[in-house]
Length: 397
Image 1 (cartoon, rainbow, N blue to C red):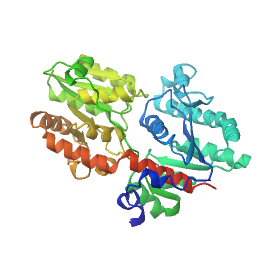
Image 2: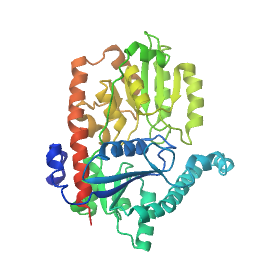
Image 3: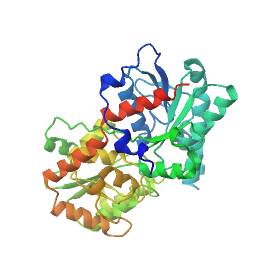
Image 4: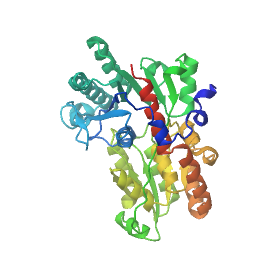
């Protein structure tokens, strides 16, 4: 491993006054933060983009602008054909025959049209750096940048588990955890063009009493609530597995709060949930504050992905001091470290057993606070935002 790019070496705290001391006479670096789905979709991609923007916009070294495909506060709207619009109307009939492929086509159309719609803004704003999490959009933008001889650098935040061959064309790669950095280094991408810089996460505990917040979600005092925060799909987030495992617990007092955003699998998943759990499952698309309220109300947090690159919601669950049921993988190992556990969620019955264990023998408050403090020390907003700004400033042409 290249020790100069490990988390501990690269992300030690820098006082805010020191990090801004060289802003001086240099004009701020123009940073365009771009999210095709922001304002229309509420996945981790969109949430993390908005969160970075809100944290960086007051940094004196940067002139940050947020470009979104939907109506989002403090952003510049970019004309595009949103995926959900295409799926609701012109592609609806086709989606009945092959939901996955039609969804992928609609997603691609959204990114291509967004890139075209963004060009006038890039010409007028003339950014130094464009930051995105979506590789296909980045490819289109790089094509037009080179065609029109524009000068900005394009940074990809590798939150989608993209392989090195996918990110090699970008000017700079932000890896969210060390394993993808090591893979890219082995592939041949120079270390000068990338670093490990995870997303930070925020958790703001509601002021209201927990019993009151639980009532907002329809939870009685003797009921046990499991919360999942993810896109609603089978192939990656394995929402069907969560539903089946909670049903396997065979306890009408156990309820599920699904926080996330619909995907092509969602109608079938809702049917499965209704069949196996009845009214014990609710599907909610919430803003960040609402997700925090759901975490506060819940008794346990679950993420069933077998492969996970990162997972900001898992960080939030740890900060909320919730017991976590997860599968050990690159993302959860990085976030939770020694606290990740060894539950193999590839096996039927494993999640049900883990949730029963958490319910019957919950971790102590001291243990949950220890996990919270460990996670907070690695994903501090103050430290990570300073390092993010440092990286952007270093890319100025």
